[in-house]
Length: 124
Image (cartoon, rainbow, N blue to C red):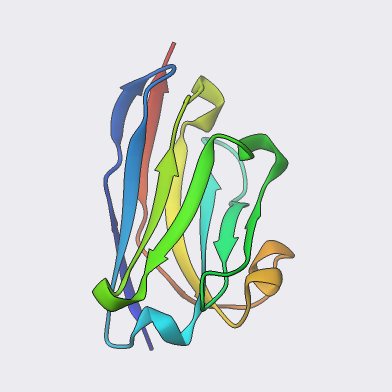
């Protein structure tokens, strides 16, 4: 089982940029498609972005297309979520996830492992 630890969250202002990181241990991230999910206050955890094992395929929720970019560095065993032009609606706890395929993550399929989450708070 791969263990995932997110970092990089914090309090930012509307329009700011930040980078979330997901560091893996136990197993290499190259064995998994990876994704990011966000859970806003009072809402269910929702899909944000996913990337295939090779990095050749990516998927995004409509709400973040053009603003969020998922990437992976398999050599460093790390997955990133680059966030730009943040909005107050982006406020959420962001969780890294490991799954069997990027399409499976996009469509709410099985997740093998979750990180503990990192808080992103966007002020108006």
